[in-house]
Amino acid sequence: MGKAAALATVQRGGKVLLVGRSESRLAAAKSHLLEKVPDAIVLTWACDASDETAVQELAESLDEQSEPDGNGISWNGLVVSAAGRAPHGPVLQLTTSAARSMMESKVWTAYHCARYLGAKLDKASTGSVVFVAGILNRRPGINCASLAMANGALEGLTRSLALEWGPKIRVNCLSPGFCDTERFDHMEGEQKARMLENTAASLPLLMVGQPEHMGEAIYYLLTAPYCTGVILDVDGGHGIRQYANPMTDPMRKL
Ligand SMILES: NC(=O)c1ccc[n+]([C@@H]2O[C@H](COP(=O)([O-])OP(=O)(O)OC[C@H]3O[C@@H](n4cnc5c(N)ncnc54)[C@H](OP(=O)(O)O)[C@@H]3O)[C@@H](O)[C@H]2O)c1
Image 1 (tube, protein in one colour):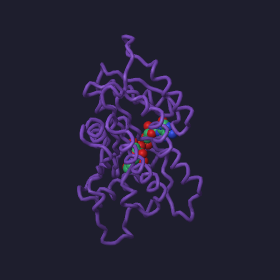
Image 2: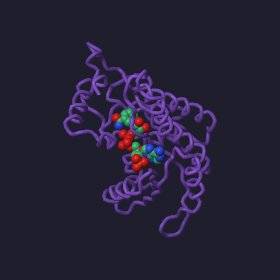
Image 3: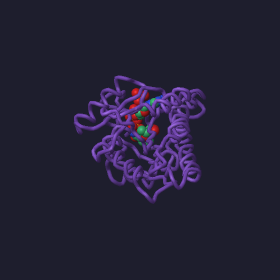
Image 4: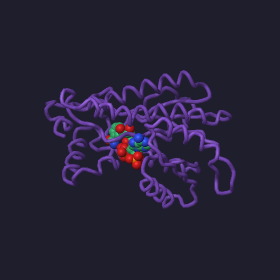
């Protein structure tokens, strides 16, 4: 979703700085963007955003980032879509450390980025922050409590910062439903196909989301001049889906 948001940005002439933990995945994401928009300005920075000091270092480096012509760059948008592998299972069986790791990779990453990078947003124009939470807070799934907790925390952070940082900086949050992104690449092919099929069949729109749906929605929130404190559901109708028999909930089987 982060890469799709970056693509939506460079397609409209924006510059992006991609952040993730792996140099090689960042290089692949950069090549993907340059393939689509050859003259785009795409910078990268490898760090683990759950590490507060690493995010502080990134924030300090921003003053030195420059375009190829040597001009400094002033940033006016921050998108945080990081999350590690989601622990899945009943609360009584999951280890507390697994649940805690979800909070580290999804909530504390966002908090650190807001705290140190939010302060760097260009206040001469208007700045904008977009977090990415998820449907499982307000429409929980069985065996997904730690994701629900993380999503709920991000919604709270969104509304609180929108109050604290207005009017110069708007703060909003995308709440995606199921989306076919690289986060499921570790799954075995047939198992993944079955999961996508089951989920699509349960949704009013009968399809799972694609990264570009989320990238465009993030870009909308980044640039929507009269939105702040908004949690935008982009979920194919997941929030209103029905089960004749809750035992057929596809999340129960994973
Ligand atoms: N896909 C879905 O169905 C779905 C549904 C609802 C909500 N969401 C939420 O939407 C957000 C984006 O999901 P996605 O599907 O795009 O996930 P993804 O494909 O797994 O991408 C997550 C990105 O975050 C980076 N990342 C993870 N931990 C990090 C850390 N500690 N520091 C810096 N970067 C980190 C990853 O790169 P590295 O691993 O290289 O660091 C990766 O680029 C997540 O918060 C997810 O929970 C997803």
